[in-house]
Image (cartoon, rainbow, N blue to C red; front, side, top):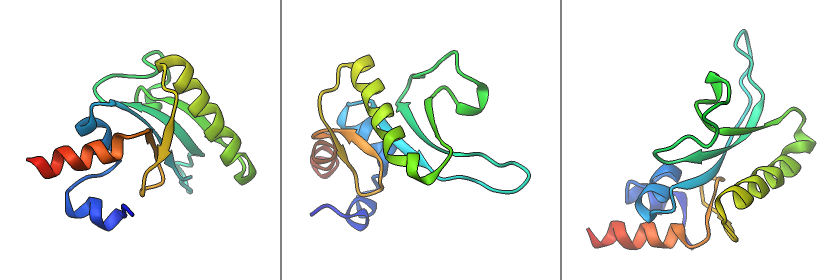
Length: 118
């Protein structure tokens, strides 16, 4: 079983999984922030080295964003994000990484294999 601790020992996070494996894309979750600069929770399709939503608002940092306004929307918005990424980039299968983000299937094992080989 691959754990966060094991990946951290190798110096790998969600971004690194996509970069090292060559998949170059993943879906990440960011929880809400509160206070004067409130921001809703989001699922974002993140491209490593490219913007998945180059014409989107600046505060989404070039990532296609799916807002989660209520807790019961979290899973449906994840499904929308994965559907959009799958249709846009031709990805058939995804897997959840130990950090709670979603990677192209096989990317985690590939990143570990490459990292250990160095």
